[in-house]
Image 1: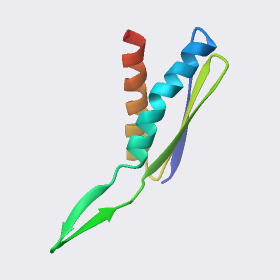
Image 2 (image 1 turned 120 degrees about the horizontal axis):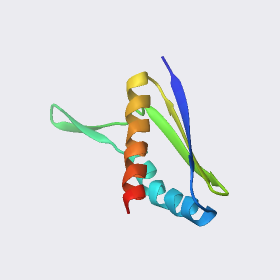
Image 3 (image 1 turned 60 degrees about the horizontal axis):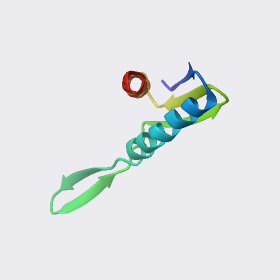
Image 4 (image 1 turned 45 degrees about the vertical axis):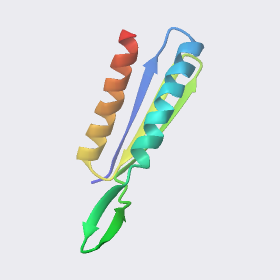
Length: 92
């Protein structure tokens, strides 16, 4: 079952939203491009099975995170990861 979620986070100003987007951009690229090496006999194969995709944008003082996933487990895990990142940012 495919799913999607959109998180909209209000920041005090546009600069804060832009800075949060910049910080999260690196996390998106690392997570989406993560590749698992699987050992099969004497060869190494790359597993490129992507279970989710995400996009981060900002509009004025709002940060918008959109996650699309192939299954509910991936959707929940990805959304929770972003929420944890945002929680860390809030404490800084």
